[in-house]
Length: 321
Image (cartoon, rainbow, N blue to C red; front, side):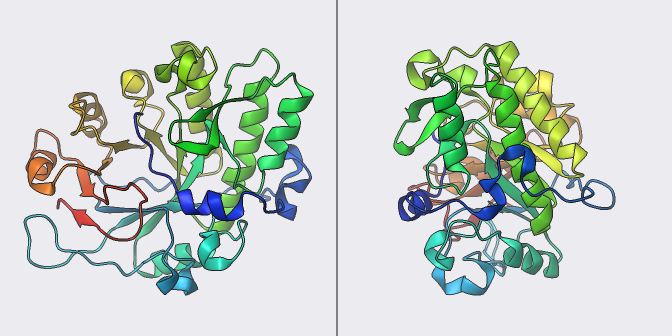
């Protein structure tokens, strides 16, 4: 991906915070439910309307900063509509709740009370300093010849690309860490999971610090999809447009940023053709420039317009449908 929306305020507020007890014992010992989420895996319909909120709003402190009652007029409508799917962070915003390890359980419960579903945002391809399990990544990196934590993500100095190769067991370690996080998603009551930064192979060694082959990326991404399904969660493919034809069968829906801005939406049609939704967001383009395309039978994407600062607050929010 070229630009990734992220909760900048979260990382700034909690970069020095102590890790939570749930992650202190290491990935293999991290909290894991005795069973995966009960019942069948939730898979959204192709035309499910969505909201993408990763930054909290203090006005909604009871739900960790998530505006679960948001209702907005669509681009070509006069009556407000509510999202059927919310994509929110695993953790409540530290600026709202005062710590970096409170699960977004209250928000998920409130979303469910609205009759909607919740997708759990976690980062699978980079290491973030503001996360409660950050020190485990640092310790593993130091113990294995600095082979895990790479270059800083462009414009995000508190986030570094992770090495998903496995010559020293990096990928095995990352998957154990992701399993601990997915278990937390289940604990919080989420219905699905979005793994971010899963297209490192497209960025190149100069950007990431690591030489990641397309084949290696496929191994990692498919392992993530299998991990989510083992816990009875549906799973999103985040961007990684170059490998959609090889991954569409493994993932339940797509989450995409800015494909209309960069004229690269064509590959995402494979998800819709397979009966799987595309949750799509634009930051800089006006709704009038892409919503008619997104709503057409040619695309049938669930597209939204969010703020140009990409902070992914509750507003602005303009759904196309």
